[in-house]
Amino acid sequence: MTKIIYLDYHATTPVDPRVLDAMLPFFGPKFGNAASGTHSFGWEAEAAVEVARKRIADLAGAAAREIVFTSGATESNNLALKGVVTAAGVARAHIVTVATEHKAVLDTASTLAEAGCRVTVLRTGADGLVNLAQLREAIGPQTVLVSVMYANNEIGVLQPVRQIGAICREKNVLFHCDAVQAFGKFPVSVDADHIDLMSVTAHKMYGPKGVGALYVRRRNPRVSLTAQMDGGGHEGGMRSGTLNVPGIVGFGEACVVAAREMAQEYGRLGVLRDRLRQRLEEGLDGVHVNGSMEHRLAGNLNVSFERVDGDALLVALPDLAVSAGSACNSHGGAGSHVLHAIGVPAELIQSATRFGLGRFTTEEEVEYAAGRVVEVVRRLRAQSPV
Image 1 (cartoon, rainbow, N blue to C red):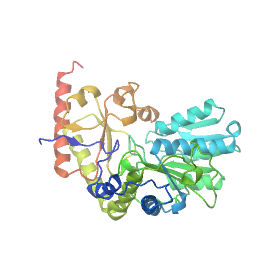
Image 2: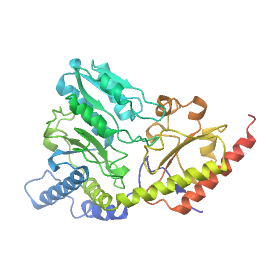
Image 3: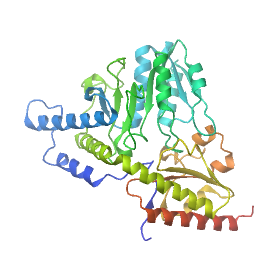
Image 4: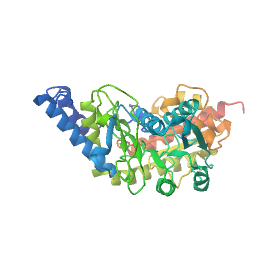
């Protein structure tokens, strides 16, 4: 291979050419502001936004009026948690979340705790799954929100979202789900899963960066949410700011492509992921899969290699774009909080490698990547004094 093989699809995805084609006119002749209601430029932009809003809602099983556009998943998570807690009254509120959540949820919860909100952070098992009995027990009279992600961005573990949502509905507590890694990969239904707020973003599903959305339930129950940005009253008063029309159009087109292709694509990725694992385990001893294999995203493989320094491994693989964990934590030195939370030993955390397969990953690339990893791990072990 003469090119760098991209296997970091959980960090971001390339924009699908079909998505780019849909966006391009809105960088040029269709440049209007969707809030300009007095002329055709604004009307054209507004119409395009509403088409995209409907497409995103359709993929989520929601109504178009329940989709609030944001700058991305981090803002959506902030709006969901802070918006619900602020509406309920910070000093009286209690929220429940999980130790393996994305930092956009955990750090937001920490900020709320500093302001007086009570926060319960649940542990998981070694498989990365939430214990439903512990979740049920954690919900009390002051609990206003439970926040559990659909699919983990590091280890790919799929939480029992439908059961979690049912518990929340039974307890009359709102359920927020960070569905960033799941949305567009397989069917997600906010009604069937009893989800009241859901964070999604375009760049994890072959759309552009800088645009996301928050689903906010408007019926049975209607969610009360306090806006976290002021100025103009856009998006039904929930999120002010001039809309990113080209990005929103691209997000909508990405949803159209996903709805058409995701079932076949999910099966293909599962086969490639299993082949990658098989080749690694055939070529090496001391390979540990992190998190559940049974409940896992098709394109995810997170593995640790005994007797290998993780930094040395990544440096020795310049032809493979892989990561040691979340892109949001890639500049920190503390190691993965997700792997810590599921009890992975420190020596295996430092050698953990995340392989993220996606729409443009080929069988040839998987075979090459597996061979290169086996080759480099063997060489590093041979050079190690251990």
